[in-house]
Image 1 (cartoon, rainbow, N blue to C red):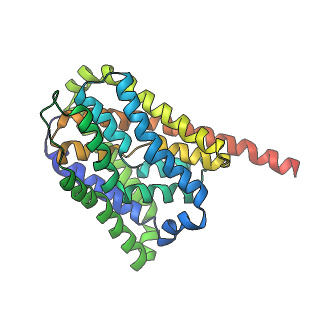
Image 2 (image 1 turned 90 degrees about the vertical axis):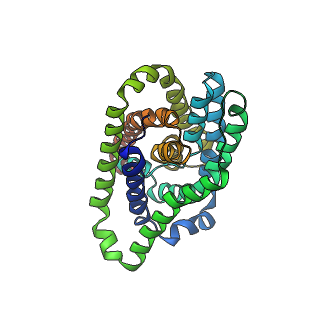
Image 3 (image 1 turned 120 degrees about the horizontal axis):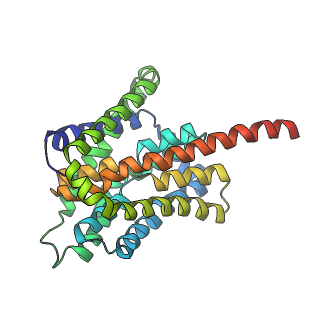
Length: 296
């Protein structure tokens, strides 16, 4: 993807706004939940922070992606889940508290997980085939700047101005979502030729990653005894990654525009599967509620 004011300025601004919005939804209690309700949280983190990256490496190998695009897919897999996942969980009547907790923890740890995962990816794909070096420390610092700091600002707003945070929750969330959507559309329009050229080659890989992560994110918790609503919530959190972080890291931190192609295309695709699951969850809940009332 071409570097421009959209990718170098507006995109980081979009993610900052989204992370501030996410922060305004969080409290310290959300982080305490890992101690008070550890099982679903730990299983969710296991799916997101271990199984999903392993799926990313496996899919990149199975599809024999060129090195740049293999690293791009792995970057997507090691990125935290996005605020969009919480919108979908809310729309599908999932476990909102669990979703927010997982989103908070994975985003706060992104400054460690992204450099670690990318370091392994670069060691596998970066030598020989690519003349690239991976700046571990710089990436840790810069990912922290675009994730942790805006989130803490949002949490600070909620702590010191709770009425403002509560009143602005709906419009700020909608504004952030629409803003991000417009930025992604602008990036697609700007890089349409590249997308048409490369999209069909890489679409199967990220579609398989998305569907496989949703399946793993649901059935692993179910096998470990997590109730269905929480398992579906973990599936959404595992299957919907923060593609905005991936795009920002690729373009602004790694200075490699081609690495943003797969996350950019994935950003569109994830809405298809995400809202399909939300629709199914909401419909299932509407059907289940009258049945429960009848049997009662």
